[in-house]
Length: 437
Length: 185
Image 1 (tube, rainbow over the protein chains, first blue to last red):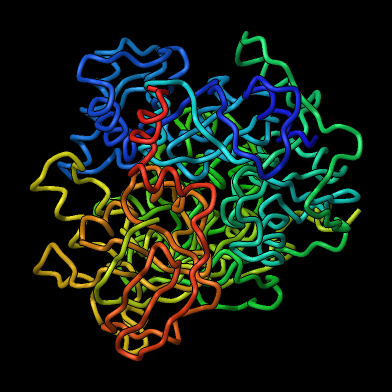
Image 2 (tube, rainbow over the protein chains, first blue to last red):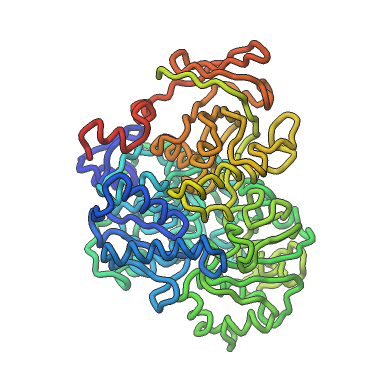
């Protein structure tokens, strides 16, 4: 069996499952947020009764993150609904807005808080829940009805996916980031290339990445249509998780020579800085091919591009320069925002590097990655041409249908922010990082 | 599946993502409040770029912006319908607008699952891409027993794939009704 099949077999109480069969699994964690939490709660109450209790309060995690810093009355009401439910159900894992517990983007907060555990099953009411697969967890997005069902029963049916394996051989060149790898893959397989399947990432190019790099890969499997992304856990994984939870997890691994849907190999040294052109994540081009494209906006943030390592990368390029277009910096979580002020590059904090470059600094949340209410920080309101570290560029994704969005790595976005046009990061990286190993 | 769905078709293209089905700024309305939930019907498919909205002509809104209900009952799409986010508001908004089925060559899996488990709309798969064979406004009829869609405007019929594994949940009307029927809850 593959790693994904083994996790689902364990969760189904079986010794073996085959890809394609439908099984009922026990859920280890259910995560929800402010957009899908309120309707999930509504369905839970409708189906199980006003006074029903959740199946296990220690397994429910509620992280408001989408529409937080807005005056939209409906959005604010949604937070009130979460707050009342968490209080009523006495939920220990609720991260309330306006308190010290507030986190920000759920997919980055989940690992920070120790909920991404090897061998476990996580469902979340958000398509980028697949991010947690970087930890060797089965993690996938679901809708409100399924989440309401889990709240009452702790179970869900799931079709066991086949696995597509993506192997990166050799050391990743220093000007290449995890985002370049996943944009290359999605460009190769298309936005429905992995529909109903698991995507596994492997090879020394992947296993030499830290957890944040690995999360960038698994985060975007949904942009390839994938059900879940997965990476075999190792000491890097265990070290990260054990620092954040005492939970007694049981890591699982691929059996020797399991049956894969397909195996695709890449030579890491051949990789190029990539973009996804408007209006689809599979509309790939190398930065060289679109170099010089005029921009009006740069955006660094989100679950895939707003982690501390993303800002370290961007700061390395931006330090000492002024941005040439409006540039928005949005840390994924409150912890990342703190880290911006305590992490130094070349004698200066990342925070100061961005401020001195003229960037707009935002609060931790999903912000303009998905557009949101009209007063959302960084939202594209008109015909902007934006380069962004986020994960989607479908029409209207970051606000206006008239805007155009290019997706790229933090290196490429930072270099492009300086010049105001799409720019190869190799033009700005320090010399020692500019040479491929 | 013993069900017939008859009405006007609304045609869109490939990769219709959930931001096009219901733009993120509209995800704030209550799904429980009868007054508010109507807005999901008003804004259903409002994120589709104008020239691709209502093919082949384009420029046709699925729901007029002064109304809550659409005149179209069947949505015709190409590949990867419903890709993007996990928002269940997407199939819900189509149902709220009055649609009963989507016919596409393929679906993103979360949308498909939400449509089925919530009992909102029936996601049929067609063997061939019907985007060029059916025009917005055509009168169509889906025969759930024979698994065909007839275009009464042109007189042509096209085969649909059987619903397969999920047919029991579709027939029950969603995952809760299915689970209740099988003594699971």
